[in-house]
Image (spheres, rainbow, N blue to C red):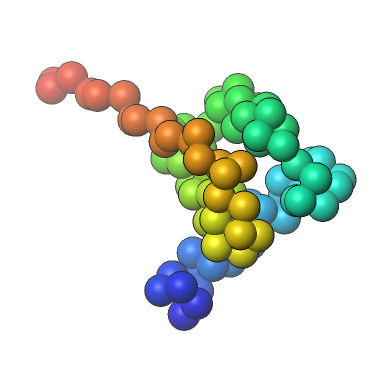
Length: 88
C-alpha cells in the first residue's frame, strides 16, 4: 500500500480530494489557505460528524503535504474533537 495506507484508506482519500477539487473547479496550486478554510467550514456546516470531517481533513492534509508538496497551505489545520459522552 502506498505511504503505508491500506487500499480502502487510499480510495477514501482519493474520493475526498476529488470531491474538493470538483467543488473549487481549479487546480490545487491555485487554492489558498482561505479557500481551504472555507471548504472545511462548509464540511462542518453540513452536519457531518467529527470523525467524518476529520477523515476529509486528513485526506486534504495528506494531499497538500505529500502529493502537492505545499504543506504551508494546511499547516493551520487542527482536527475536531468528538464530543465527550456522559456516562449513563
